[in-house]
Image 1 (cartoon, rainbow, N blue to C red):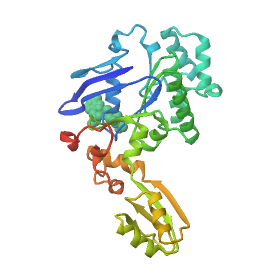
Image 2 (image 1 turned 60 degrees about the vertical axis):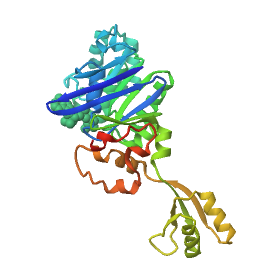
Image 3 (image 1 turned 180 degrees about the vertical axis):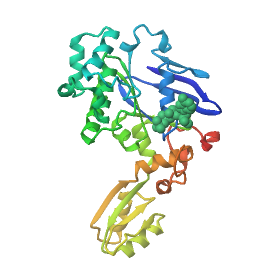
Length: 330
Ligand SMILES: Nc1ncnc2c1ncn2[C@@H]1O[C@H](COP(=O)(O)OP(=O)(O)OP(=O)(O)O)[C@@H](O)[C@H]1O
């Protein structure tokens, strides 16, 4: 188990991590989400004892990282995939790490195979692509067969096949009962990878809930309806409180919000209106995430055009969300 309690880290007058408390449980993948500069990497460094908090506490299995008996057998971390000796082969890089941890040759070979680097293990790590570097970093994290994995943006630089591979690997490691804590700024990727989400913005906690709850509450439900009698159906639905947006072209489907699909079908049937399609849909999760973290983005366009599409009222719409207060100015 990983526990952060009132973690606070300041760089000059910049609060990188602001009174952050959460618990990461074993047996599931926990996604750590937030826009660029939200404080994800800083939090991970604090958990690993690589930086000291100004206030608060970070504990792994109830202890500070520095007090763990064999830390690398307890926690495997991928923080900066490029942190390798570029002149060494992947194999030698891992062998050096294995020696410092008392990890044997068998485990070394196992891990190289697990991350799919067997064919290039004798090649210079400096010549590796970003994706291969990520695989090497993951191999290093897994060497000590740790019960906890802390991975900072492991998906960066991976091609679609690599993304599916890391997703499957993380889910398998969690299914084995390990604690998997993985950061990302990609909402859609985390939605299909993580069981639980911890969302931060400007160092503050915004949401701590299951991915299912997050999706359920943060994306607006809509119904796509195709009918040859669009005008009559629109009148019928709006009279009952639905919002109906016509398609861009004649004959294109209508998009209905504020009414569930069964009710749309019932109303149409009662009036004898023909429907050619009746499909419940969800709004974009990415747009919902952007809206949620809109006021806490560090860089870029904070107006968030896509955010408006989500139709959410910030943190208030999210289960487990922390009340906005000062956080609203994140
Ligand atoms: N060593 C440092 N010195 C000064 N400021 C820092 C340092 N490390 C981080 N920061 C600042 O702290 C804030 C949080 O940074 P951090 O890297 O933790 O965010 P992040 O969520 O990991 O971002 P990204 O997704 O871009 O990696 C940022 O404003 C960053 O500029």
